[in-house]
Image (tube, rainbow, N blue to C red):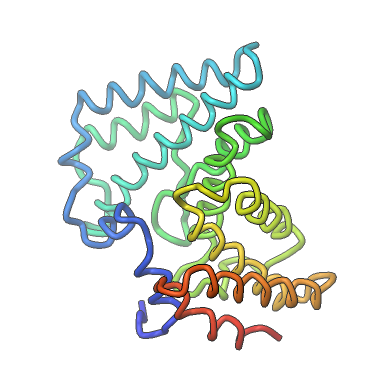
Length: 245
């Protein structure tokens, strides 16, 4: 990966510590996923899947869905560290956990083109659909936004693995809603940056209202640079602006 590209380095440099650990391999999944830990993960997955599918109030089902998504994100991060370090998942408990999660109705999705486990965006979206204005809505919006974004490219966020289509627009709307309704969220800077990049991609993809997407991308990028002048991500703003048609 060429981290000499300024805006790419900005994205990588500001990733959460958990993602950086994935690349470093300092903490290995087979050191953390013991047989006992796997049992706890599976028991919790079964409980949350049951609540999400039951005739419970929407808020309770949404809470279970988002909680499950957060746990699956934690597990996939651990497994992906092993893949980054060894080229494959290590340890019998980790392999058994993968199979038992599948049996529990909460399989980990494999991103074939990336060679790693993908984000559980379907559970975040389920939680959001069940309780769009609930207490977990911010988590669900950011989980859907960030998971879809990072699983959508290999090295260059402006070169998605699949061509951008109108399906990109709901994700952009989710990002804009997240920034608007959860201005104190801990992940706000990252969420705003991702949304701006998605707007740039929409302008470059030749989607309807291309000029509108371009103008909105410029607005989001300039606002981001104003609000986060000391952020490493702000170093990417000039390059993203130059990438607009």
